[in-house]
Amino acid sequence: MRLATVQCSRPEGQTGKKEAPCDENMTGISPSAIIDRYIASIGDWRGDRMAQIRRLMHEADAEIVEEWKWMGTPTWSHDGIVAVASPFKGKVKVTFARGAHLPDPQKVFNNGLGGKEWRALDISENYQINEAAVKELIRAAVEFNRAERAGKTAAPRRPRSSRPPKSARTRGRST
Image 1 (cartoon, rainbow, N blue to C red):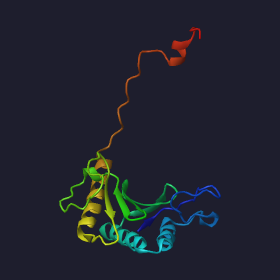
Image 2: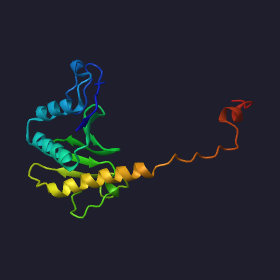
Image 3: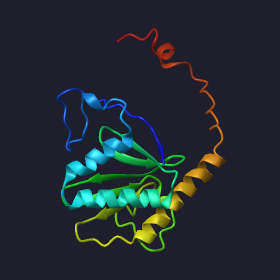
Image 4: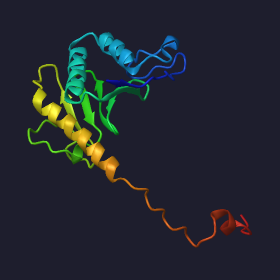
């Protein structure tokens, strides 16, 4: 398992909707350690589901990288973001960043089905996760990221407009 280091950047006293385990002593702690603390701090069925999703990520891809992003979101990446997971009041949401591009023959995704990029799995307390199907989605997301990265070339630049810059166009006008 590859790990990155993270720095907490939440200003002192600032809190968001969800409390992230971020304090002045966490600078330089691995994202995995922060995620360990975060999952332990949840303390109910949502923590169990977060731990289950985390386990599935690592079982599906031994090289997946855990990251702590956006001031409190466990994120898993391999050649790009694979998925993020967040607990909410009545569910745990696992969002696949490029889920709309992934095959889902087992119909695992149950949210964001009409979008052009992401797809999500909303997990309620009694929801039975099809672990094999979720692992297949994780593997497909990694393969999609690899293929996209391998096929990427520098984006062509748009030709500059022949119009002069706005500042030059507005000179001489009276207001």
